Amino acid sequence: MATKKTKALKATGTRVQPVRHSRVVCLVSDEEMRIIDEYLKKYKISNKSNWMRKTLLTAIYKNLDADYPTLFSEHEMSR
Image (tube, rainbow, N blue to C red; front, side, top):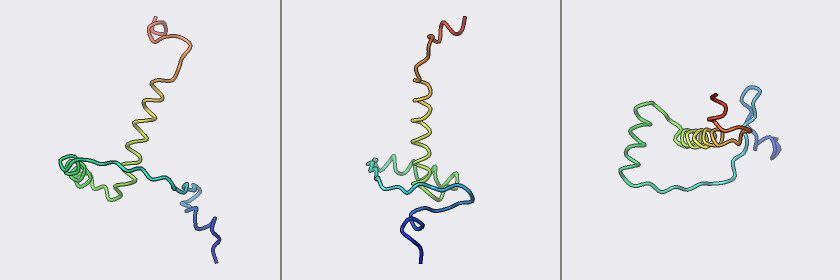
């Protein structure tokens, strides 16, 4: 019989995926939902929640990387 810990972790090769407990709810208009559905259909994306999570976190990571504090300003570094 599998333990609770074994059930909670899904092993894919050597990587272990984290268990997701927190839920995020976002409301969109009918037009926005139509656009999302057309995009998913066009690019044959079957897992909407995985796509949305990756898309959102990619945008957040890019902003965090761009806003990372540096010792010198961008102008000073381009000299």
